[in-house]
Length: 161
Image (cartoon, rainbow, N blue to C red; front, side):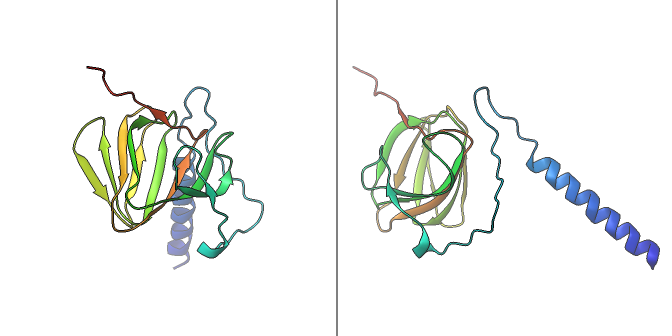
């Protein structure tokens, strides 16, 4: 029995090391800081405790930063877009990861077919990938987003005829 317990402890320790290695294995792009979360204290916020502020590039949208600074580098935030918000073809410098909390966002990658993603959905859009995003009518869209660098919105100009 002691041998089984020792094997179990070694297995759990090894699995933990693999998980830590996998989480830290992502490489940052040139000029991009690797996302590092060094919390000094426990943070537990209810939705009512989040501090919402206007998003400069997106009228009517709000964000609540939970760590970092979107204007200076890596960050994570909750975003809230009014139903019907549309952002035409654009791209971001850095990878964008998110999780939908409420509402439904429709995303079209580089002019391709749109895909609707609702609550509980995971999103990953690599930096530089052109996409259009719409918060579908019927409910505001709330989602959690992380980026390893400054938040930016690079609009793609429509082709001139």
